[in-house]
Picture 1 (cartoon, rainbow, N blue to C red):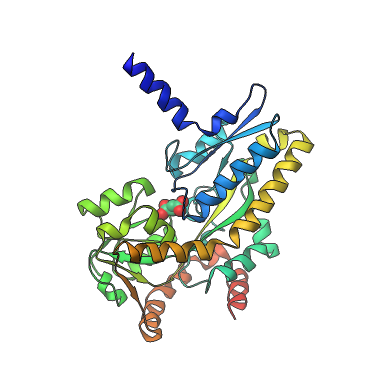
Picture 2 (spheres, rainbow, N blue to C red):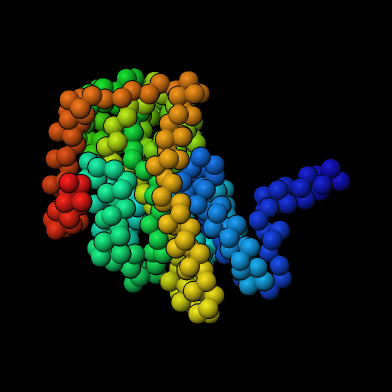
Length: 328
Ligand code: LMR
């Protein structure tokens, strides 16, 4: 009896959003890997869920599964192609199997801040990127911001040479592997949900991520400190299965597209603020944060920027030039 009661409770608990799903409503599952509060993606996904369930009540019902509870990023795109999930927002680094065009976002020091990233994404080139995977069955609906990445390790990182010989967890991206190698580090691709444990047990020595992820996953607890390098960007593409999307009734698709557009614009404008709050929360929780002088940061630029050369063909010199122009 006890077991049954607990099981029933946990079903209700895990599917709070599902309670909103009525008979006959189309269920839209959205799987992602981060926490939900103090996180640009977590907040955006929850807002999307709230608005769909309110404004499309009777027609559609969204269930968000955060924290890798349904799929990790390696699995989610396959699951989407199988029709098991309808929305996901993996980081742009996680689309390697589908397109090499997104590599421009992983190149270190390509964009000076998230506003520059936003402007590039809004350009014709950026807009076209949403459709680069359509032959492979995926359609990009919107870019979602997280923010700039910082670097942490089990020892202080002031100069990139401090990273020499250390193992760094990276997302599974060739650019990020090359970036860590350029510092003399050893890149270890790993799923997001495994990073805290790997840092804690010493399987890896360090990692790079945004303040919201460093806070949300509590990486600062198991690192010596975090250096504010702002060396790269971590952004997302909200994606769907193109066949599913095109199979929707036009009025349903239009309503959903409008909600997505509004949520994306609203939350993208807040992403930098959310990361600043997460940074402050790391400090408040006792995490060590190290800022770099302009001279110190220039050494990181010199160490990492040569990585661009390896990937010019994938991303296009014209796109690099366009991104640099936006930085001016
Ligand atoms: C990571 O794997 O570090 C990130 O892509 C996680 C996320 O979704 O922000």
